[in-house]
Amino acid sequence: MSLTGKEIQGVILAAIALLVVGALPYYGSDYLLSLGITIAMFTVLATSWALFSGPTHYISLATAAFFGLGTYTTGLGFESLPFWSLVLMAGALGAVLAALVGLATLRLSGVYFVIFTLGLAELIRQLITWGQNMTGQKGLYVLTDFTEGNLYMMLVALASAVFLVGWLIGRSRLGFALRIIGDDETVAAHSGINTAQAKVLLFMVSGAVAAMTGAILAPRYVYIEPALAFTPLLSFQVVIMALLGGVHRLWGPIVGVIPFTLILETISANFPNQVTLFIGIVFLIIVYFIPRGFAGLIEQARSWSQSESMA
Amino acid sequence: MTETVLSLRGATKRFGGLVAVNSIDFDVRRGQVLGLIGPNGSGKSTTLNLISGALQPTAGDISLRGVAIGGLRADKIAKRGISRTFQLVRLLPGMNVEQNIIAGAVFGHRRRWGAAAKQDAARLAERVGLGGKGHMAIGQLTYIDTKRVELARALASDPEVLLLDEWLAGLNPTELQVGIELIQSLRDEGRTIILVEHVMDAIRSLCDYCVVMSSGAKIAEGTPDEVLSDPEVIRAYLGDDDA
Image (cartoon, rainbow over all chains, first blue to last red; front, side):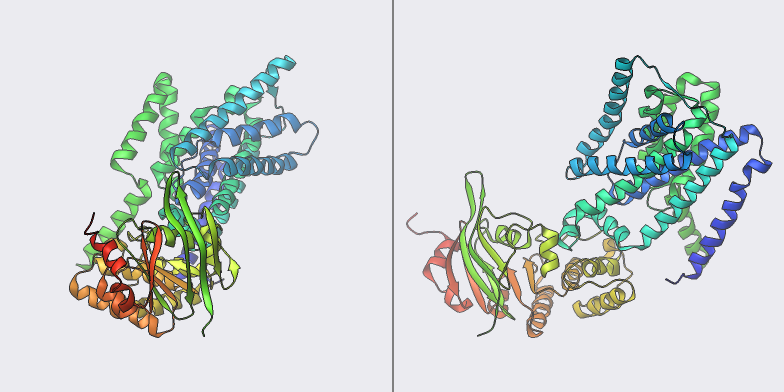
């Protein structure tokens, strides 16, 4: 495997960014660290979402289902099992859930898939609520010794892994197959691609990562309940951030996550009742004005400046 | 006698009460160009779809070099060595010409990846008349060039049988000549081709053998000259005097 000059440049940039980002707990304030966790969380979720939905154009609203599954894995197991094993277990459960959903729905196209994934999170939430009502339990306390810094570092590590995996997939046959599927599924099948298998595989990666994120973040919430762990708002936020950044590049979603999180933070602090209104407006703006996201705008600006300098 | 590559026996496709393809039999030999002709709606494209796996036959057998492929998924059939173009050109709009061609090389019958796939894509681009256009976007291509890309993609897997669904349709007279020569050159290479076609000149000059369909059934077969002078074929195309 050889790297081109541009790729080496990318690797160096990524290493510097990782150093700056990874050292945040040592120089940042508590507030900055807390913001960092939120940004790291959405970076992982939006990037892994885009790994699947970017090339295939299948909009998944199942992020909350996987995320909630992860938080409950930690919530139920943290007293009896080591934390790292719970994160791995959450990943495995997320992959299994994604495989089941994928096998059931990925043969369906477009809107059916969207509705099913939205319904899935709701279904699991209702099941857990029902289970809790049966046992008379309300929620789960997740009391651990982890500091915000610990959680942050775990998320940064997970984010790095996601970028590495995403980069490898992008260079692989599987990544190429998914791009063909996204462009024309019929052509993909007639070119010899097992379309269902490719889609399910990537959906499993995406689901596993979202579940691992939930598992890592469970201690941050201290007390988890279905309404919090499976909130549909999370699924929508992830979709919007990824689209805002641009899903056709691996680095696209993060370009959307950072400004969106900062603005969302400001708005929810000052106008807590207008948060969903804001999300709705941003969504409309993306659809009408920046369908390829910030990444698309950046590339457009770059090609303009190149043609300017050539002229 | 040369080897039979593809054979259909009683291949049938029903859509509810409509019989689109009614118990079709024919054989394609290695290196043969077989023309599948007939009026609109006679079931030619449906027959191609049965062979390529886009549709599952309701009954009958389809076999490639003696191995049954009828009813397999399209991707499995592609891997066994059947590739196709589409009646309405289907390209991958998000990729350039080179990537569109590579798409046919990576997962199909003869699989290549990386530098080998790139090299072959460049060779095929040259082969179909797209030399130097590898980095062009699909949207910038002329109509005949989009057809060339699709053809190159289909050739990229080095198929046992190539299915061309009205590949010459919609070309202007000059392009048509170029197109016929291109397919002629594939025939000279020894490619086995099934051609669904309306252009009579192309059928006469390209096909070794023709199967004529009407209302889902085979009504004639033979050399182009034989079938095109067959009264029943003329009736199918031009309508019945008594009707």
